[in-house]
Amino acid sequence: MMFTSNNTNPSQFKTALENGGCILNPDDISLISKLKNITDLICFRYNPGSRRKGNKIIGNPVESKYGVSHDQIIEAYCQSIQLGVKRFGIHTMLASNELNYEYMVETTQMLLDMVELIHKKLHITFEFINIGGGIGIPYTPDAKPFDLDSMANEIHRLFKKFKNLNGWVPRLYMESGRYITGPHGVLVTSVINHKNTYRKYIGVNASMSALMRPGMYDAYHHIHIHAKEDCVLLEKVDVVGALCENIDKFAIQRELPDTVEGDILIIHDTGAHGHSMGFNYNGHLRPKELLLKEDSSIELIRRAETMDDYFSTLTFEPETLTFSVNNQ
Ligand SMILES: Cc1ncc(COP(=O)(O)O)c(C=O)c1O
Image (cartoon, rainbow, N blue to C red):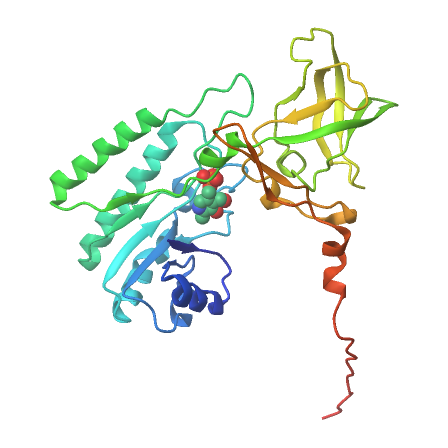
């Protein structure tokens, strides 16, 4: 298990080591001196700067807050060696929701090049390279799924070449989140209002507090209306929640079948960054989560939040804080 973080409070490193024996993956050289009782294994998150392009979610590497810069990475391993570290890994995470498998192959090549460079300078070998997450899923109906087989074949070729040249080879780690969970969740909501002003609005009983990707990233999530899949009469609408934020829209100017109150909307691909990114602004509480099992049974795996949950942090022993003005 890797502990990847940024702007880390040193106490979090301590907890990661104490409770899980995680591999620490600091993302800045300045953190090395703050690591007390460092383990014998360390990994750094590498940021290649202008050598690579990122994307909208993670940011352009030169502007992104993540990772140790190219100029600092050798020094970071050098300082770790001086502290007695003996085992090493290298990590990066440059793109998110990337559908082009070649990007991941280039990332692998980049880390293998770094491993070779650091090995030449410091004579250390690497137990693993970790190319992060970032494998995308086809959110839009016309998008092509990520070509996992081609990525695997190309990466295998790079590893074989590395082994032939160096006589040793690191392991490959990945930390795919969206690819595994994203397509396997939906947000189910129903129509509660229709509004006809400058645009047509379908008001639903979920808000961006249950799915913020459309508002945050302008992201497309496919929507279908239950039992109206074959409807050919479509109209352009905005599908909206009830938050006092104009970005609280699940779809903007989307062609959907005519709806009536009570119609059920299925918002696709919400298994990643749905509930986990949820919040409760404006008192809109997070919904329950249901698991559809292989035998078609359904299990409640998280109850809906209640008003008691919402106000729970206001229940505590009253305390009055005072301050004194001290001229010294
Ligand atoms: C460091 C790190 N690793 C892995 C992931 C998972 O990425 P994805 O869901 O794109 O595979 C993230 C997500 O933001 C991340 O920040």
